[in-house]
Length: 265
Image (cartoon, rainbow, N blue to C red):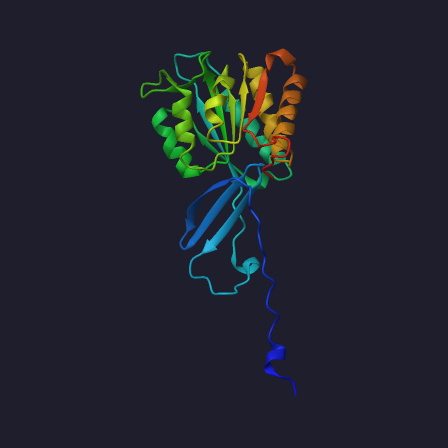
């Protein structure tokens, strides 16, 4: 005779995680109804997303009940005030969109766009999209400020400290690419709130900025690291006719983060 206890499934082995010595940050936000996403990132650049469903039955199989984890959002911020030299920011956005569609893992990325950016637009855009990557396309100043627009469409600068404070709000930004002249000057301030910053150490023209952005995201969405994506973007710009000196890109990361190991796909 077989006892009823013989028919019961064996208890699942306990899974233990040892996170001693790790510095982890992240954010929790409501996805829909009773589902919440917890997105966490560690010093080494890794990211994990946990979906919690309030009231889910004990022992429910996660594979059958949980939706797929959300992909990384790239927030494209563009500003070209009417009293500044015209830029082909539309072509830059087009190139990034095409690069994501061509890449192996492009379907895991979402490209959100905010045009004619004013300072008062930033907080709403950041909290609404909660991006992993910020891409700024526009003008920068030699004093380390990004040039946004005011209500009349005229140029208005944003100081690095103010931008850093806004980027800290969603606790989701892991990489910032500033495709603007002199933008490397902002890196020190931004590295207090994000893992890595890609900026320009001098002026950059459209003919270099546009292919650099396309090459960067083509590699990033194909599973390459941030460091490899910067190299790919530079190569794309040079292959398109830009001289190496025309694209003075600098990649910087906080202590403990290796851009050569940081991936989004």
